[in-house]
Image: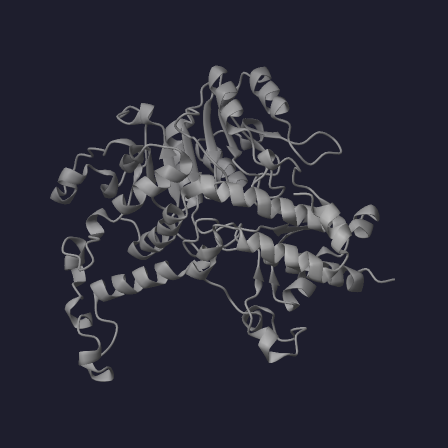
Length: 476
C-alpha cells in the first residue's frame, strides 16, 4: 500500500477518509464487525466527553483494545442466555405472556443439564466443544489442546510437570520484561521447590539502546548456558508487540536439551501458530484478548502428543482429568485421559466455555487465522503508515516512537507507541474522545486493530484524534 503517495495526492482529511472507506468496502471480514457489540462514545468517554453533539456521543467508540479485552460477540450472549435457560428459567411465569415464549419454560433442566441438555451441549462434555476450533487456531491436534483454568494457574501446572530441576539443569529462561504474572509464577514456583529463584531465573533483555530481542541472541544464550532446564518465552511480547520466531527458538532449545514452553496470551487468535509441527512441548494462553471470551474467560493449554500417554511425569491431578469413560464412577485411583485433557482438574465453567465457543464459531466462519492474518497485515500496516505520515513532526521531535518491529512478520496486530513524556495525559485525553486503547506504564500506549471487528476507519479516527490530542498536550 503506497499510502504516503496517496495522501500527498489527496492532501485532505476527506481524501484519507475516502481511502479508509474504500479499504473497508474491499475487506472481506468487514461483515463480521456486526457480530460484536461495540460500546458507544457516551458509554466509555467518562463524565466530560469532548463531544457535545448527542448524535456523535451515540456512535460506536473507536475500540482498539482487543489485545487487552476483546469485544463481546453477540453469539456469546445468545449462547449464555441459552445456558441460563438450561439451568433454570430466567423469568417468572407471571411476568411474561406464556404464549409469547412457547419453548422457554420447557428448557430448564437443573442438574440434568449435565447429560440431558435442551440445546445438545451437555455440561458433562462441554469442553469437547471447543477442542477442535482451538486446535485449528494453534496448529495442533484436538487431543493436544483443552480449555481449563486460567493462564497463570496453567503455567504453574505445566511447571509442575515439565520443570524437573537437577544439579546440572535448574534454570528457567524468561524475558527480562515478560508479563509480570509470568515472573511471579516462575519465582514462586521455583521458591516452592526450595530453590533460590535469584539463581534459577535467567532473564534475557534487548541489546543496549534497543527494544526488540534478537532471535540469534536468544539462541546463543540457550547454547551457552548449559544449566537451562526450561525455556519459557512469550509468543508475542506484551509490551513491545514483537512476535518471536517460535519455531527457530523451540528447535534450538530442544536441541540443547531444554524443555520449551510458550505463554501465548497475545499470540492466540492474533498470529499463525503451528505448535504441533514446531514440536513445542507445552503452551498456555488466556482467551479474553483476541479470542473475545469475556473478562476472566477460561484459558487454554497445549501439550504435544509425544506426552499423550506419559504417566511418569508428575501432574496436578483432578477428577476432570480422569478418563471420561469412568469419571463419574468416583474411583480413588486416578486414570488420566489421553493428551491435554488429562491435565484438567475441575469441571470447566459452563458460562466461560460457552462464551468462548460463541467467539470461536465466528473465527471458523471467517476462515480461521489465515484469513485474519491477511487483513491484519493490511490494517496494522495502514495504521503504521498513517501514524508516520500524519505525525511526522511529532516523530521527528521525539514526542512519540513505535517500539513494535516494522517488519509485518515480526508482529501481530499491535503497535506499541512510546511517549517519553506525558503518556498518561495523552491516554486520558484519548479516552475522553471515546478512543479506547490501553496504557502500559511508564511510557507506552498499545493500539491493536483486531481484524474480526476493527476497520480502516477505526485506524483513521484514532490517528486523527491522537494528532489533535498531542497538539493540546504538548502545546508550548
